[in-house]
Image 1 (spheres, rainbow, N blue to C red):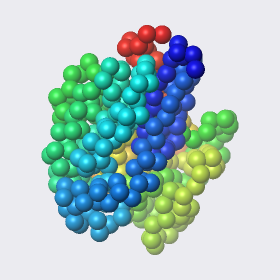
Image 2 (image 1 turned 30 degrees about the vertical axis):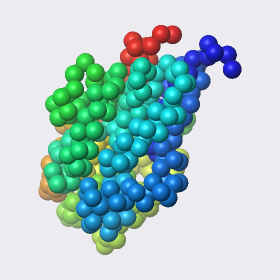
Image 3 (image 1 turned 135 degrees about the vertical axis):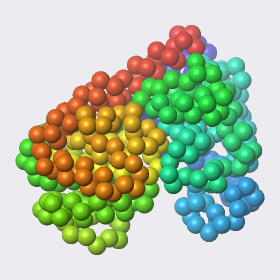
Image 4 (image 1 turned 120 degrees about the vertical axis):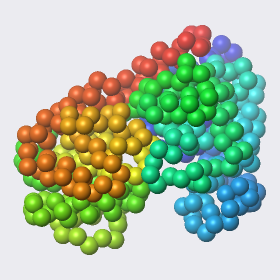
Length: 375
């Protein structure tokens, strides 16, 4: 192979539409580069010796109760000192002698920096930023030793790219990182945009409310049902659609659709009048960007990244977590005024067009990475 071929490496823990999109943007920006991919889940979860050893560390650093729940176990898997140090070693071995111009990782659960190679990360969260959520307690943090290692993730980068201002603040204030090393480049929507948006919601008067979320409890589903029951007292013909999960609930006018492919969401966004996900923990919330792309007013909670892109009374409403009275009042307010729904939806769509789209992310990535590499 020609020794003058420029090479970069992309490191990721697991596949996700946003991760795939970032990789596409990097390939577009650096089309003359050869990109290698290090897919960590293909390495870590296929070696029984790693799983066995890490389980011992999970018990040691998180406690035995973590292993009684598959969900807790999976969440804890990447936050042991053993896995952190192992990833560092594996990545160093894979990068050694390759002469990469730069490296790029998605997420902040590991440090894949390599000495002498400008390194960049793109993350939607830090662990300490979760403390701003009402359901995340200090006892839920990883071990003190792991948190010390987490700081090295942000310290060993050329730049830390984030999706929101609260993560910027956390990296700077919670981990004592120079603010010059942190930049918010936002994020885009993941639903396909190859179809024109044609709203089919009776000019926002069909009284259809849409929820999209995979974790019913974390996304505030129980509070939503309480609020929706109050809405039905005023608007008995209102409908609530639930996509992404299948909760066991009993309430009138509720349609549970379960998990759907991104391609199939077009129909439900364009035939709804209001979007609501009252999350209790929300590192970013791409579904809100998607809803605004589809000209829907959004109702959310006043936590973490959400105040960045939901302007109270302009493109949506923010309630305090757990405040189902406010949630019901916001839904009633919008159901009472289809024209307000339309106006708020247009404001949200305008924000997405200006800032929260992948083309904007691509430009910001190029501008900032170019400062650290020679092209």
